Length: 482
Image (cartoon, rainbow, N blue to C red; front, side, top):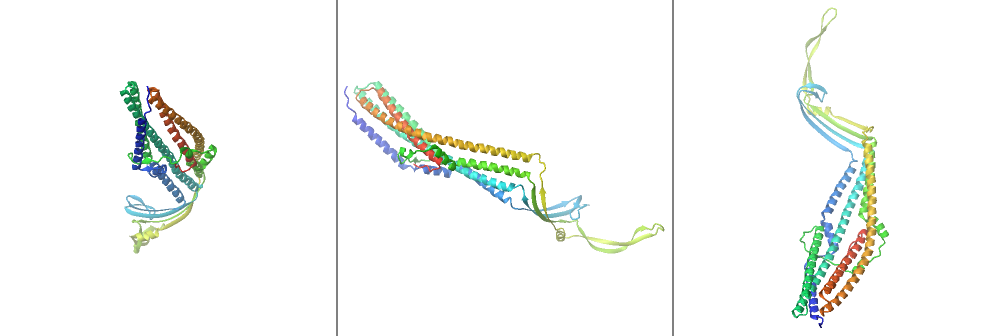
């Protein structure tokens, strides 16, 4: 049976593909288009984890300021007023009395540590290191977020290209079904051929549905990273340069690792935490030393029971005894003493007192608590040393792996590009032969499946190559742009 190539069908396919491309372009124009840098900026501006890290830094800054203020003298004032009943000590005479009275007192004191085992100085140094660590932690959180945004951004590009490929394959499958139906109507094809074409359309529709779902999920993921509403509509800008040109670079793993050691925030954060833990040992050791402080104060008091002698008058004679031999009475003058309550102002003035002095405290035995605190500080320091080394080891592993992955991705992209080109040529030949009846529908379907798989593999390899290259930039602290 003789058949000519169906150029009309091919023209319809190209027209439908062009319409689809222009439709996607118009849709993109209608939506906000963001670059990868804009996505990163949005995430850094809105992300709540960054805000939490900033709050933690603010607390550390306040602790650092307070540790410096602890070097200043302390000044305290106090006052009291009491109503006393029963047997009480009169604060003005320091004597027990059994009567109701009011009392009041006021004190002002100040003290300053002259020596405390350098604890306060070491605490300042430790808090400064902890503040620097929290500042670096902000950079670490930002750095980790940037990598997540880049991954999500790449996933959108990948899923978008897969959807375009799936749409194009669905158009081909529908056109092929239409052709098979026409050939069946004139008796040149069987129902099996039409069924095979329908099966291919169903598979293509499923691929489109899966691609749409995956693209929607990747957009949702990026929206969440940017802390934007889940229904926020936007599009992403594809790389403006050739993938191979943008990703091609001869990286040396050793050099990348050494550069990352000085720029990667994870390493700096681990080092600062190690220094802070080391300084904590000096803080704990301060409890071994004596403490010397200087202080002074002033105070006064008042008591409503305090009296003074207002007047003394002669009041006759009074017997004070008898002589031993003649038993004669011995008398002396008797005086009447009148008392009056002392005024508040005069008591405050009369009772005014001041003091200055030194205080020396020498630790002799404290249940080994000081020794235990020092030992715990040493263990914490050793643990942070191990954690710092683990961080360096992990960075070494991921950098060497990233460089190796980049080289493998370059080879894979080259291979998949060649394979896709070959599969396209092979499918074109099969399609032409199928149109003239030289191959059956199963062979055609197999060739189409192989072509589709080769295209998907090439798309995956393309974005995998670009992502691997951007990972290297991430470890080098470079700005991630297309």
